Image (cartoon, rainbow, N blue to C red):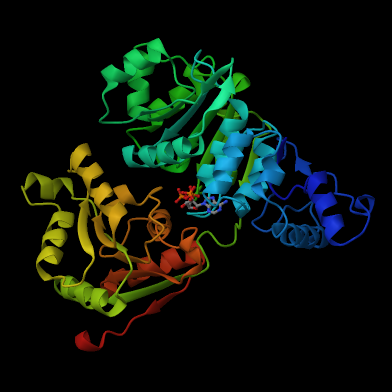
Length: 478
Ligand SMILES: Nc1ncnc2c1ncn2[C@@H]1O[C@H](COP(=O)(O)OP(=O)(O)OP(=O)(O)O)[C@@H](O)[C@H]1O
């Protein structure tokens, strides 16, 4: 059996709602959770609601969700399961009201069920799975109890930062003041140092890229027996990555077992999600009753994103970009370019990101810091670029390496200097803006395309249900 995320609210929500509507909770009978057995493949679940759920019940639930959105806090949902010092810390940094994905997923996550968190970019999936992890682990130095797997070093650093921020306060444990230890085991790190740490005093939580993790597992330095929660962030990306898919499948099935762990997958994009859920059960990546928490399925991208495009020939593109930067005056922006092709590498040409970076350094006269971020840079250079970003407004020139997971809430403008290869890439690039807590601002995604690329952009609009407005650029009008 697998549960759709439209299952009714818990009794807590009902009592809250009853209080709101000053009626007795008994009158608010949550319908029995509806489910469909695994024999009825493929899932009949449609985007809006499954066939066994009446529209009125759906509207009732929707109104319930709206009505409770104002009253529920993270403490209401997590209290008694997530340690007090973690909840207190979350409130100190402003995490008081749950986001939609947190409100829908935490009751299921905290009940111990395997989950697929499928929600828009910037909607708070990271905090949802971190709160689960802190509700499960015990602060003791015996073994690694939670493992978070990420596709890039930078996303790993970002998740580690949030995890450490939440666990910053020490707690009483075995009559000693202890803090939870969190190890980041990321590409480009010092695996030797990690090896001795894992042996001497294993951390409670490990955040790892699959490459580094596999090295430690193959050398039996790192054991997963005690891991109770396994999270795979950006799961669709990793399962589609030729470099990562084999190691990830081995991690999910050979190095650890679904019976001994709670498995959580997270992503803003899970193409053919019914087939993905089927594969999760068939390949034993998750238990049979895995729950698909699909938040806002009819809007894969934040609704306040403003999409536009400008048609120009390739040789005008640099001057059009400069014109747009001057016209838009972004608070901060990310300019995405395509990764360098093997042919261009063999010909010894510099990556297009570097060429664009050099052009902007020479021609852009605004006050934003121009920063480069792309594959050819070594890890230290990439880390240096990111530390530059934290200080002030920036224009980041990047390849799709920066399109997944990067949380730079001050970003207001995204420019596709080169159109992304897929609609999923378009979604993730766009998702670097319109992120909490700045997501109330209007945020802009502008694509520079040739007339021949218009049909590609139209296809992305159809797949992701958005409208793209054409910009008429006076200075470049034919
Ligand atoms: N309950 C909350 N209240 C306020 N802000 C929140 C809350 N939860 C998360 N945030 C903020 O929302 C932003 C986005 O969170 P996060 O990076 O977890 O999103 P995500 O869903 O993982 O995005 P992506 O799919 O792009 O990785 C972060 O800056 C985080 O601080």
